[in-house]
Length: 444
Image (cartoon, rainbow, N blue to C red; front, side, top):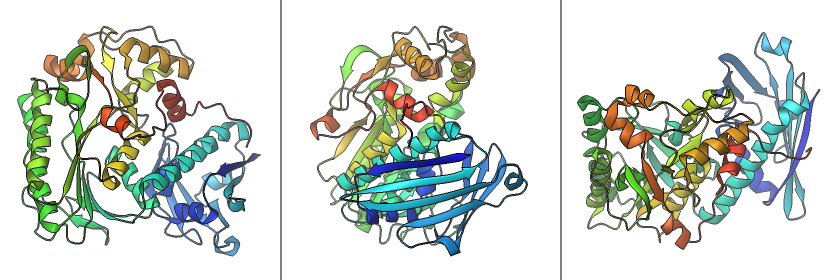
């Protein structure tokens, strides 16, 4: 048993091979609906070993030097005991020119039936094709990019997207460094040489908004953003970095704008999160004021991925058939798939015409009741059990529930639309099918 899956990619064989050989490829190819995490990437396609955890169990894939052919073939085998006895696994990867395109073939010998593997390899094909297209559109010159929050949900995937595209990613960490591509960052007093040799900065770090809105939690949210952002932006400008891209949020528009269409020119709201985001953005702008550093603030909507964000707490309920709308059902949800969010960051780093706030949301927002209906349909489960209003209030408090769970924001990506930006998954159903492994695909 096993599978042989072949896909045709609109890129040269050299481009495909280089993408596969660079750091980050494994992060981009692991399906987000599967219980798999990367412990250590293989350092070489020739003879490296990748270490993963699958549902908590160790999985080590050893690359076989004797079967390696530079530019066209590499092979890995499962070596972990006892999994290698229970389920032997051999994975052959082939990259072949096909006219102006490339054929990539995955040939797996395993006890796992092909039907169970097909969604995984279909996902890998879409990821590889999407990443190559994004880099062809936006990555012309390799950059050295410093990233805060690089180990978080978005930071891990963004670092992988950038490094597979040929950029050098320097992780700014708050612990002792573990390699030449890490530097220790003190948000309260960053070292003067922290950003030496850096072309661009992506600032993602900040305390999680999730949690009960106590005064202590609100202070942590505010203090982890306002102050550290300005100091980092000032340092980026002083170091001559060309671009400073900082995370922001559509929370700047306020929690309840009803049916009012919102774009980057809309007035900010007046609640707690709106004030935090406004101060956060002001820090980034003030920090680079008077310099040649371009500042972009990525106002992120509800990020969709089974690994976290909006989907993670909802997925178990919907999978059991007891999911449903949050709130009244009238609330507008301005969402974005995680890969489209990464593309927005990539464009912000490389497109000199983008300056200032950019709404990182898909072009088709939906109301809460429709989101639940679509998610249930994708998972082939009913979605008719509304979440009781007291649940979010118990977890977040009345203020937190109002500003997060019950928020209604009809946000449009006006700046991206004007720039002719292409979304990988502009439709909610398509985005959820991709993320949940429900794409119908012919045999590969």
